[in-house]
Length: 300
Figure 1 (cartoon, rainbow, N blue to C red):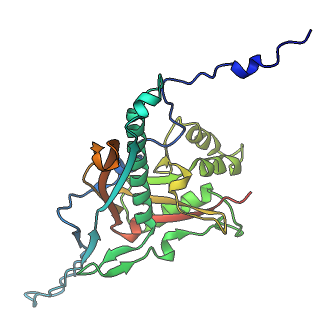
Figure 2: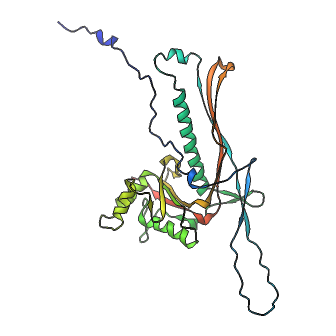
Figure 3: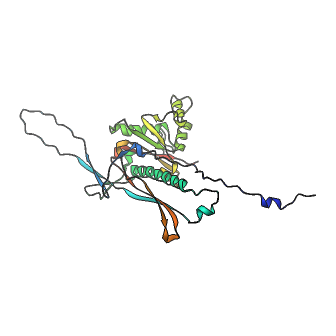
């Protein structure tokens, strides 16, 4: 006698009463590592003074020689961001034992804003900075502040992040007399793995790189290594090249008003509940010699 075939049709499906968030970068990892500026209004001009060089006095009571000041300016503008979600007025009732994900949605919004801040900082680091007396000028990161994707220190060959590339980034900061304190290197998990794979086991640097990859240390060759979501780092899909960004903290200015969240009943949408978060933030590169862009190959 065969088992009743219709019974499986009545097996119940159980749903979790709560909501779990999927894997993602939640905190802003870069905003604590750059210079914060207060901006009142739509923009702020950051006034800068260049170096001054004294002249040797070669005579008695000679005429005073006046040298000009080297003054510059960078412009910092915050831009508005928002994220809104809508719940129908019947969602709470019709979800039954499943809780409406109000708090989960809010947590996801805040995490999204934090990633957006890091993205804005990285885009400003390697992008075009507003310059000039009225902010209409545009200064790009020069080729001299970039480490080519095929840089090896010897025979050129497209490669990921290597010890040689990190050393070259360090050299570019050193040769410009950039301060040692506050140096950051921003990369993804792929670039950390690259460093481990291309460093020979016999190398004296292997243990340091391994400790870095394993999270046992975060500083190497004078850089604080910060791993962010790969989606935040500039990437050219046609060439499989990802940008790793090295900078000294004074090279990036960041402004933020602070996120605000409102929960409103929308009478115009059948009394649906709207959760909307907003923030105002922006970043700019303040000096080219404080930033180095390292191109890394990610092709299989």
